[in-house]
Length: 226
View 1: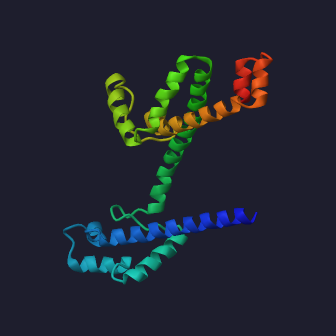
View 2 (view 1 turned 30 degrees about the vertical axis):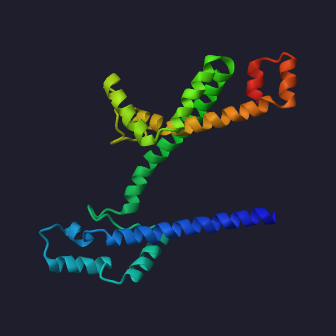
View 3 (view 1 turned 180 degrees about the horizontal axis):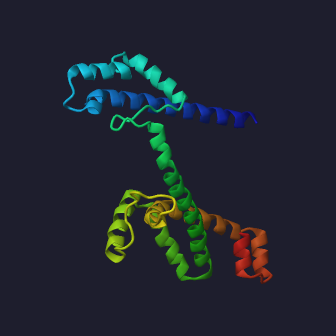
């Protein structure tokens, strides 16, 4: 129990340190980046006086330390501020896109699990299925953005009626979600296929698995049990 507690504490400290580092780095990055948020919001035709007034309203005229503390306070209240482009609340814009993002992730996870099971099932019952498993594992060697570009090019040529972009995608527009889900699922499918294959090979070496095979129990039953 003591060791488990130390592990949990170490993970918590690591997570807090990582989050703090990201917050500090992001704050510094946006402050040293070229461009004035007040000028961007008002446009190039705005007077310098108007820009200074808006900078004061946004708190950009205060010291960096004060601005950073204010940002942390707003973050604790889940107040992400307003967009410098359209003045909309950032939290509302994030919420609008979160449903689609969660849907893509959830569908990709379910598809990965189903495909990993299917590929190992084929590899268990068919000789050529072993070759299929080797091909599937190559999905872990290619980056997702590369898979996305290749999939978009292939689909645009072979299935021009199928949308190749997720722009405007909603939960109900399944066609827009189809290609992104397949691309996102490529890497986890390859990873989980390999993990499941290793686990099945390990399970097949256990004494009860060998005994079941010796008693003539069907391969489907032994595979399902494993």
